[in-house]
Image (cartoon, rainbow, N blue to C red; front, top):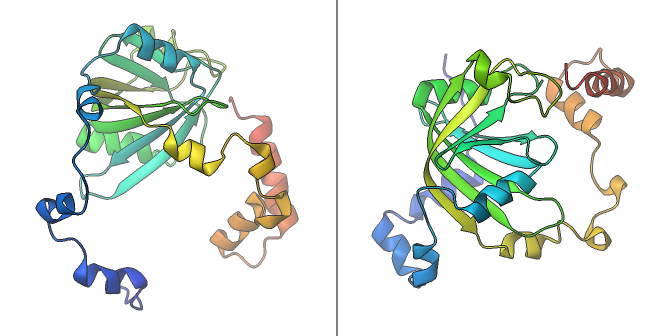
Amino acid sequence: MTPVFAASAFDSLRLDAVPDQESLRRAYELPSDAAVRKQMTELTEQTRRLIGCSSLVLVATVDAKGNCDVSPRGGPAGFVAVLDARTVAIPDATGNKRLDTLQNVVATGRAGLLFIIPGRPTTLRVNGRACVSTRPELLSQLTAVGKPPASALVLGIDEVYPHCPKALLRSGAWKPEQWLPADAQPTSAEVTLAQLRMPELTIGDIEKAEAESLKYRYE
């Protein structure tokens, strides 16, 4: 039986949402020539260097039914390998083993990347074809996260776009004086406990499991 959900704010707002691209474009000014021109199909020396400075990349994928997912990947600066001007490879470090990102890539062969450099407002968008590789000679090169990974997400570049820094500047992401205090948000354990909906578990159980998981994060 298909579950029945109560109407949400989305259901209401969708009724008079923007219906097509022409209507959307009318709500905005046209982009500048520079905003269009700076999109490229391969890496320059400068964008290679940006990737080499990045220790965090967000990976966007979609499954065969159109369900979207964004997942972070992290490691020491330069953990994403530039194989050539149109190819990068991301080692798959230990995670929750759900394989959401990798399964989506296998299903659709597409991915989008957003490279982030801590402390800097510069980001880089890289989109294109994607595949999952377990080729030993590739994996042996990708040891920045501790050891050769079980697989690597390989992206064949279609679009490279240095993204405007305004979002990170507005967010104050790198300004500690603007950060909320730790007690202003639920802890990771509190969020997980609520998500699991298992009355027999306690905050202590979750905190212990998280600590153990982080202790062996590279294995």
